[in-house]
Image 1 (tube, rainbow, N blue to C red):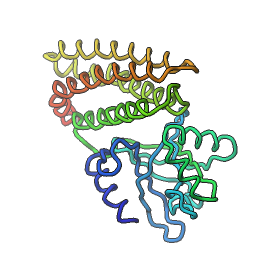
Image 2 (cartoon, rainbow, N blue to C red; image 1 turned 90 degrees about the vertical axis):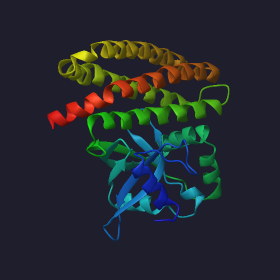
Image 3 (tube, rainbow, N blue to C red; image 1 turned 135 degrees about the horizontal axis):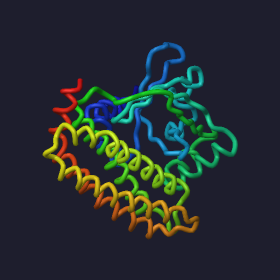
Image 4 (cartoon, helix red, strand yellow; image 1 turned 45 degrees about the horizontal axis):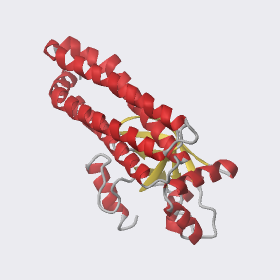
Length: 280
């Protein structure tokens, strides 16, 4: 492990996915492979891409070095890996993409961040793209329910920040990877709010009737945010979508969602922590 990687891993785990330093705003996961010779776990921080098909994509660039990174060589021998997102930890099966699928994924990555193309120019090897398909997993750690909610909210905060950066530096037309990233946020946030509406909020209704007004407001905010997500989906569905229109929608969503997340945390964290402890 390099001198650069270890501090990033420690910061990632200590802050449940939040990393600053040289990597602010990066989409990062911790990838643990099995050493092909030692048989021991080998963990590295890697940037990832959404792929729109339930997988996470990672790129074995090694910053354009002539040799593949160790983690990539490890997963060629043992493709079962562990992925840490900060909020969740899961096992996944790694599949090296080839042919047109690899080329399309790499082109999307380079479109949204030209650094990937620069890495490819530095080396004669074809930089591999690896898809990680989740097998099973759960929360990264056993936290009180309210604290766990904040960890999940922080995932959405980081994703929104990344989207704003990507939209700001994009060209006049919406790129393919940026479209996928927008749709991934819409899908994840919609799922989270459905889970709260159908599971978390009914539990709080029963245990904390004094929160009826708070929960009614939060449910109404979910409906308003769902409308914003529908508008964002509509904008990005247009093949000729204008990046400025996407920026407007992402900005509106950011303002409303961040206010909602802050409000929900202020009102619900204490009650959720008590409720979770009572049901443990």
